Length: 112
Image (cartoon, rainbow, N blue to C red; front, side, top):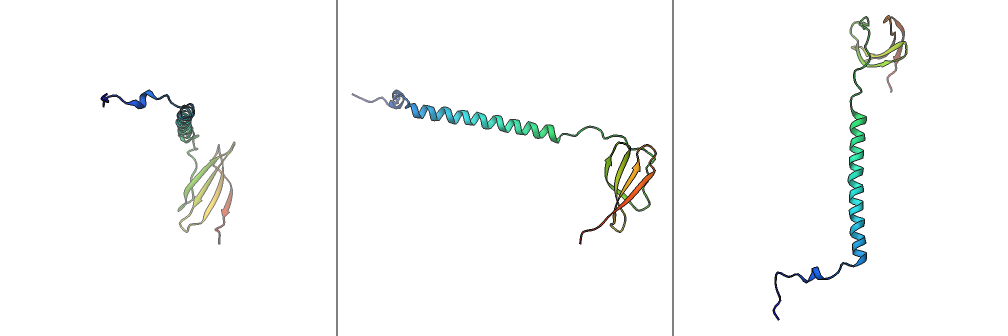
């Protein structure tokens, strides 16, 4: 009897039940991994997306000469600006939101 090279005897052997379970487990874990990556990527895109336009800053806010703004925080009726002067000293300037009048200046001490 001649053996046919086109015929594969491995196809005739039934798959052991444990191997079938392992194959299903690996496929299931692969699908869970893919779903997890898609969910995490979607959440990061949603979370890191720009939040839209910031609230309008009153046009009557002027900084002292030689200072530049580094950060802005909006409160209910106030605006806090972190400013840096030419010497590198930083200050928090609390301004009235409606009028732009300065309420307080808080110096930020440099750490030693």
